[in-house]
Image (cartoon, rainbow, N blue to C red; front, side):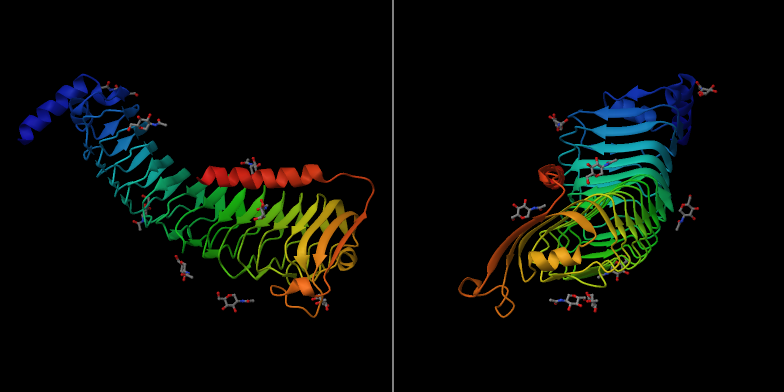
Length: 387
Ligand SMILES: *[C@@H]1O[C@H](CO)[C@@H](O)[C@H](O)[C@H]1NC(C)=O
Ligand SMILES: *[C@@H]1O[C@H](CO)[C@@H](O)[C@H](O)[C@H]1NC(C)=O
Ligand SMILES: *[C@@H]1O[C@H](CO)[C@@H](O)[C@H](O)[C@H]1NC(C)=O
Ligand SMILES: *[C@@H]1O[C@H](CO)[C@@H](O)[C@H](O)[C@H]1NC(C)=O
Ligand SMILES: *[C@@H]1O[C@H](CO)[C@@H](O)[C@H](O)[C@H]1NC(C)=O
Ligand SMILES: *[C@@H]1O[C@H](CO)[C@@H](O)[C@H](O)[C@H]1NC(C)=O
Ligand SMILES: *[C@@H]1O[C@H](CO)[C@@H](O)[C@H](O)[C@H]1NC(C)=O
Ligand SMILES: *[C@@H]1O[C@H](CO)[C@@H](O)[C@H](O)[C@H]1NC(C)=O
């Protein structure tokens, strides 16, 4: 048996089968690949309806990509010894439920996208990866992720996934985008200090970004359910900060001094007070400030420069007069607030009390419709991307 295997291996190598990219047509091609420990080139397995199992358990190393896609009948994938690959892409396999990659440590692009029945994905130690994307699967846990730095991380629409432990990651040179995973998702980026692109965290029940200090693009928190958050080390957000649709009652950015562009806070239904601990050090906003919600009180103790428009709307105890006082650093303020009288309950019988609608504008004549449209457009695009 060993002898036969050895002979077929020699035959395969003699034919250069381990050295040539292959577009797999049948099980026979898979058998051929499985005779290689090292493979130079790419392996593409695309739309072969006769295959329900892919086992390539002798392959340890591939210089190129392994792409397994559009396989309706595929149930399991096993790459038992595969330690390194340029890319591993498992895309659009409706019925695959198990992917075993226990030895994988080094891969440049790791993409597992649209495998809606994939329950078990067994990796034990991904220690080197550039792009890591897990989108639309049924996994409830991820394997050990031990990479100290990455380019991008994107984990979206894995509705069973509740534990996202990326505590090894200190730096992301690109973006981080986490959204629409399990209801009780606990997202841990406890070592992360720098993000080179956007950093967006959505739909988390718990989020640890305690060391995050600089973000080179937009920072967003959408529809998270945690009750409070301290973004304790963030000193600089080089573009915008957006907090939208979250459930928190309080949030704090104790060290944040500069926002490179705009600040958007909208639809966080339990967030009623931007208090002295929310943005204690924030001094400069070159863009706009948009506040939509039921605010009772706002204050920005250190704010000295706001170059763009300030737009306020919603219903709370805050009046336009208070808002203008709190935002005296701004010269363009568009305020449209429905103010609940101080002695009435905020979410009870407002109608019979002495509410007032105030509308004011302090302006150098700049229209703000573009700002609103751009912000809301972004939110809609994000929601669409998560579906
Ligand atoms: C495989 O490719 C390498 C270079 O990529 C070459 O040195 C080697 O001779 C090739 N082996 C076979 C069996 O074709
Ligand atoms: C997904 O795979 C199925 C076969 O299972 C194929 O019919 C369909 O076109 C693929 N979808 C995309 C977007 O490639
Ligand atoms: C993970 O893999 C890396 C690289 O192969 C290795 O250095 C490290 O010891 C492994 N860690 C564990 C826990 O196996
Ligand atoms: C979230 O997960 C981290 C580690 O993965 C753990 O230390 C922490 O206690 C968890 N938090 C909650 C609220 O479960
Ligand atoms: C960053 O996110 C914004 C939306 O907040 C988006 O318009 C922009 O294209 C993103 N940039 C990159 C580089 O992904
Ligand atoms: C934040 O929430 C945690 C529990 O989720 C609580 O223990 C802590 O006191 C809260 N901190 C503030 C400032 O509200
Ligand atoms: C805020 O909520 C309102 C009403 O639910 C919705 O129409 C609007 O699109 C939301 N805006 C944002 C930025 O999420
Ligand atoms: C708003 O908050 C500031 C600072 O925390 C406080 O001094 C002020 O009394 C508050 N105003 C109202 C109306 O609650």
